[in-house]
Image (cartoon, rainbow, N blue to C red; front, side, top):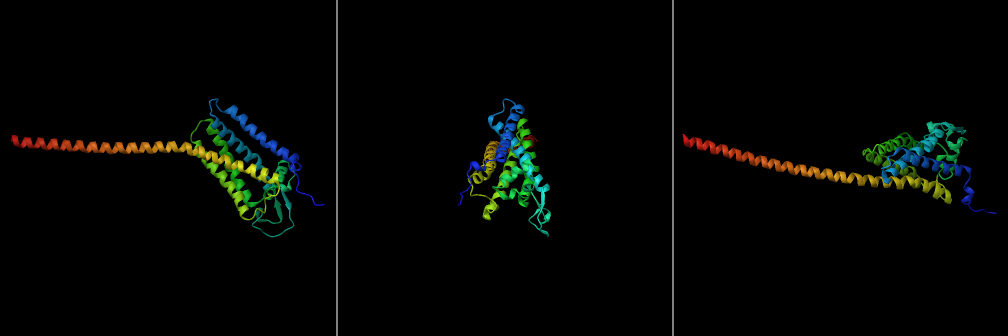
Length: 266
């Protein structure tokens, strides 16, 4: 007898619950540290920016850092021979990735790989993107948190840099896959499509877009003020030059009159 697709509840097991709890724990830790590290006068907007970047950095280090670790260390023999440009180190005889480990965080990636198959293996394009995410995006997120704590306004430039990087990373993760027919994505299952793929990935779209909007609204008044100051300075310089020129002409005329009166006296 034919059976339908598995129900939503049947897909929620211990690994799924543990994964969700770990995400919630990291978010709570980011909030708790915001209470401990930020001055009470910190605005709600800056507090949210601090919490987001700390949560973002923790996700990069804990989750995606573990993905990189298993991508380089967990292995299994494939029985294949010969070089290949599609596998790690070009060695087709060995397969790398979280699928080949029984560690707790590896099981987390095995669960996510049910929605996006590339995360179970050491997919070269994904690994390349995650190297930037973990070793550049993670530290930058924590540095932004420190600048928020110190009320350093230079943070807005780095917020812009990181938000742009997050959007680019998401684009390069999914758009090439969509253009090739989404062969590595499980889109027929509600939980895998809307929870694993849509919800957990579009968080890194909507929040970076909001941060870019806030950065733009911070930069714009400063740029307008700078343009106004430049205009006023230019006008003042022009007026000063004209006045100086008029004064010089008056002095020359007075000198000429004095010389004429001296000649008459002789």
